[in-house]
Length: 152
Image 1: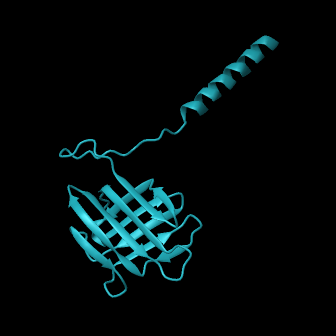
Image 2: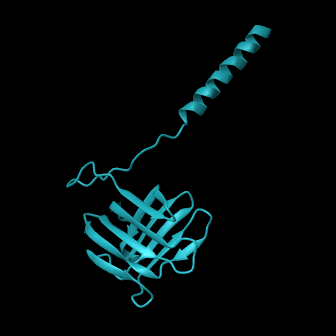
């Protein structure tokens, strides 16, 4: 009887180890499913305060003319007057904004800079940005995004 109970406990233990191990998260790179550019991988990177970050999540909202990316509590949030191909100045006069939030939840609003959208087609956007902050620990930010997916 003692052997049967030990065997049951052992089987349950091995089964639980198998279940826990099978739930391990695998790193997956999102891939563009667009038929005109199959296999194109999206990306959003930025450098602020000397640290370069590759976002876990990034997309744009055409109805809000907003581009956003996240990584471990840090984020870049860009709001423009349009998401058409072109270069946009960031300033209070234009209404175009770039906000950076570090992973300590400190938010910095850019005072000057630009965002260049080089491509916006087939629900994918690519471009780059560079901006400066006044009177803050982080003085500038720059980055680029490619094949960024559209969100509705």
